[in-house]
Length: 206
Ligand SMILES: Cc1cc2nc3c(=O)[nH]c(=O)nc-3n(C[C@H](O)[C@H](O)[C@H](O)COP(=O)(O)O)c2cc1C
Image 1 (cartoon, protein in one colour):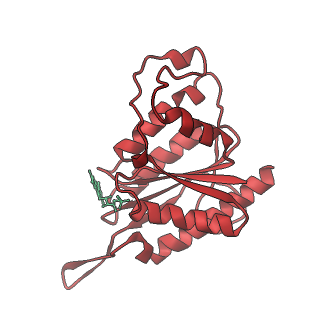
Image 2: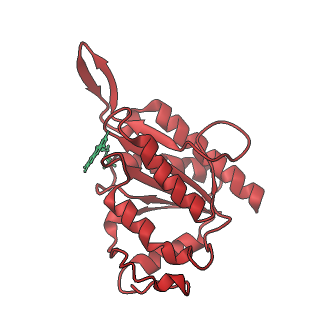
Image 3: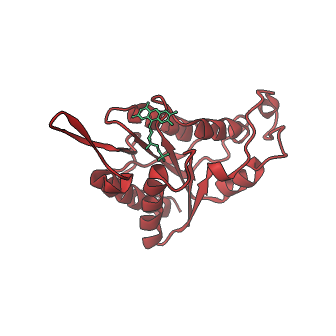
């Protein structure tokens, strides 16, 4: 069982990476082979909207790193997307990545039947996490993946990946910041539950 995580943060190894690594660690503890892809490491050109993918499952851009990433997506059983919130949205890297997978969707859903999930983090509470999650989960759903969430239950449902924030509290009128998403205990717990839900569903579908 292979689970890959895609980090859309423009900062490698920071808060979004911490969430994804926690998901992958728990998945590995339950038997998965795992891999974290930091999109910041890759050269991904933007979609040209040439619409070649409307006629056949091909992308006209072949001289960047997207073909190699696409191979990993197609080989995976589970795909976890992670993005920081940028203006109540996903990051540019994550959006660019999503656009470039259109060829896997337009003539047939080549990622259909895999299991997907999303995690996000933001500076603020109510900082746009729900919107960013919805965007990633809409993408995964449109691509035909079965979504899992971060709640402790027995079946797949449609919503609610992991949302974390760096703002922990307001004390004496001043913000109290977490140094890392690792200090967001509820989010860490949610990452581990999401990982177990993903492993369970992949096994059930096998
Ligand atoms: C361009 C930009 C836009 C941002 N927009 C928001 C926002 O709308 N709401 C919010 O709470 N935080 C926002 N942030 C803060 C990031 O979500 C936050 O710093 C996050 O922890 C970054 O994740 P990373 O450590 O994985 O890079 C923004 C940061 C950047 C760089």
